[in-house]
Image (cartoon, rainbow, N blue to C red; front, side, top):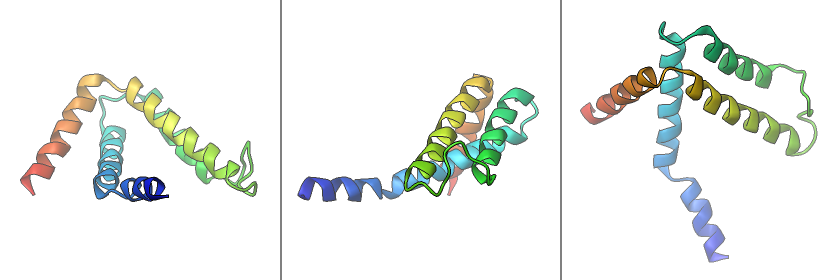
Length: 104
């Protein structure tokens, strides 16, 4: 019981939430960058649109299953988006975000 409570507290670690926010910032910057091609942008925007559309492969009315498929799709699309983006552009934006955080 104590170990599961410790895991739950670790899951609420503010550093993880901050990392999520930094990933959102990175994604927004990459979507707006002209050096990133249309294919990576289409993959990521398509996944986001799919999550908000009322049509689903696995309906959200199924308990937990409907939400988990959306989450897995977003995670897969994020990984694919980063893999399709030019690595030097991703690194440049990641460094800029890190510099902004250090300047605060």
